[in-house]
Length: 371
Ligand SMILES: Cc1cc2nc3c(=O)[nH]c(=O)nc-3n(C[C@H](O)[C@H](O)[C@H](O)COP(=O)(O)OP(=O)(O)OC[C@H]3O[C@@H](n4cnc5c(N)ncnc54)[C@H](O)[C@@H]3O)c2cc1C
Image (tube, rainbow, N blue to C red; front, side, top):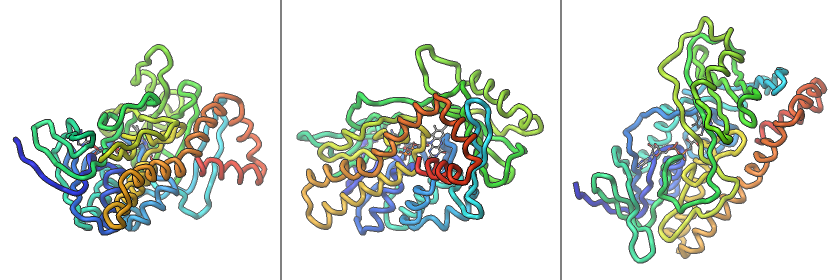
């Protein structure tokens, strides 16, 4: 097939980053935007689907929060298990602190918002390479030969997408997860289990409804490659054996890595902006990437608006994009690095033991929320 399409902006990938960029471009009145994905929607995405307070703020600004809130499971608290096996509960009282919204639902809701604002969506377009002319990116070519040419290309293809500039600082977190019904859990609580077998990462239980939960582990490969399924089984036996005894597993386990970097760099080149996990913008300690994807997508939309509607030169706009991404994420990514080191020491146990005092309880809740 040799079909060709033209747009002002083409976005490759309709995850949280791509759909948020598209929806925000629509909000800002930037027209002639084409959004591509290799899948049609709704589609599944391997993800814990936890959305932090900052993520909720972004959904509010995109005008999609009420739709998400209706579908999502509200979270009021956290069950934390330390490396020494100590257990603590943090609670936000009656306040909703976060939500869990299955990605099949979340991504589709943001996509619908983008479509309502006039964005054109092309499913089943598997981007294979960028089209480059005279030192600038001028669009994208699919595996089947179709092309979309545009003044700007936003790269939002997630973990495995290599359409961004090469990055030496690219690192990987491994993850594997499954879904169950009938696992007892404290209503409205997510769980983070810092078991020594996955440090400096953790295992989790995130409720998606009163009946259905997802459970997973994220971990780092160090030296010898570990078998993800064996590691997950060991974790489940140790941490969830009794609670899974009467539960029903839904579907197969799924493994998927998360790409990250402490550096926020090389996000642009003439005609191209990289957003979300394709730009390695995920949290180095928690593997959170939904908020970072959506936020970087919104920032990209705002700098592009400045080019199309305020005549800001492209070079300035691209520098501004990277500057704003740094200002937004850098501190929390560095904080993530500190946390990863801290969690390997007895500090988390100390904190949990001390958390009986109201002051420490309050401070610990703030630290966890800020992460
Ligand atoms: C097991 C696991 C659990 C996680 N849990 C959480 C969590 O609880 N909370 C959280 O915030 N984050 C979590 N994350 C991270 C989060 O899933 C990602 O960081 C986030 O989805 C990144 O958004 P994105 O839009 O950049 O990329 P993606 O969500 O990956 O979207 C990329 C889109 O691009 C499309 N695409 C890819 N390649 C092409 C191509 N060549 N052509 C066309 N389309 C293409 C894909 O089909 C997809 O729709 C988790 C990740 C994993 C693996």
